[in-house]
Length: 558
Image 1 (tube, helix red, strand yellow):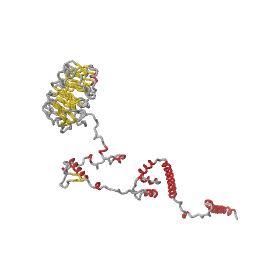
Image 2 (spheres, helix red, strand yellow):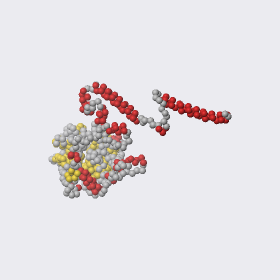
Image 3 (cartoon, rainbow, N blue to C red):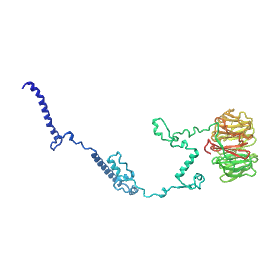
Image 4 (spheres, rainbow, N blue to C red):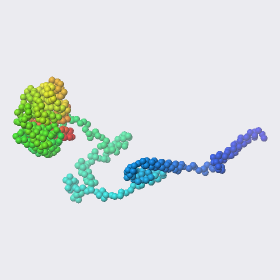
């Protein structure tokens, strides 16, 4: 054979030998993979079967593991129950029931019935079978028929609901119909649905992050328009309204000498030259009378509550007797003589804020300090000239006295020693003096109608203190000065001139422009003033026997 043909045949022979060797080795490999069995012929790729899905095997393993876990829990529970006392086992049976050895039934009872979900849910068959094992929701055993009946509301016998009847057949309406009728009446009165009550009005916003909040009501989203920005009293205009006279149920023509609110109850006291002390309940509408105490031949110069509100102290214009009315016992106790007190007439007095001391303004410049509890004299203090007015500091440790010479004296209560003495700027002689509850201000009223407002610290430390502000809105002598409990208002008045009363805003020291209303001229000559414990009401008494009362809207409480 030529060499060309020999070299041409060699590759073919090698390829055929390699193919024969491969076909021989394949059955041997399959035989080694299946020990003990005959060799299997290789099937075509189109006829080969896919391997079985592992879901059934995994479910079987999970069931076996759950069964083993349940068996272990059961064994542990039995071990624990051996040590339990009989009382504890009895309580468990009462609470959980007798579940025996089946703990799964107890878990199903604790979970409660479940409502089956829709068949088209994406859960697997094993999960659906587990859900089917739970009991379905049962119907109630007993239903109250009265719960299903609609409660009817009487429309005729109620004066408010009677006006909402459209015809005579609507003598009774169900609650739902009454609710609809009330809604209709409200919308009719308001001329439609207000913006704050319109639930269809929603908040719109261009911010993509706030899309979930667009369905919320606008009322619940903003608070700026529904709360006050500041709790302090604004100056300029004082929002207030006229109320029924405090003594409307006991009218009198005698001058009102004292008006004071009770420190703890919603009660006001009115006393005057008609020898009577009357108590009225404050409601701003009718102010019903509670009680009246008549003191024979005793025209009242001043009447005042004690600090705890259990007693009323009263003095007369021409007597040295001090009457004390015990409100709890209902007894009237006259104090005819105080040992060591040589005054012939007892008129003006002050009670300390802590209720411990009673200060009586005597003649010839004397100030007498008494104990409220025992009504005995503790000591006396003397100033130059006559005593025009006096008052305690807010802590009851100091006494401020205004003299007829225009000077102000500051005394220590415990030692009864003069701490300071200064001249009230521009005053020829003083008529009134008052201190604020917060211990910041001292107001001095003079005969020329000027009210000087001082800082209390400067009154204690300086011999010639300068006033913070001089109020010159009155032209006659200032006879009455009163701070409100929050020290935001100072009431000033003169009994020498009609309508001579002003309310001063603090700390701006400016006068409210809307009080008094000059056109009405119903205030007349003011002799006494007072604020309620939380400044909700302001009262003043005039010479016509009327105790005028006003409601201050800035303060919500009495």
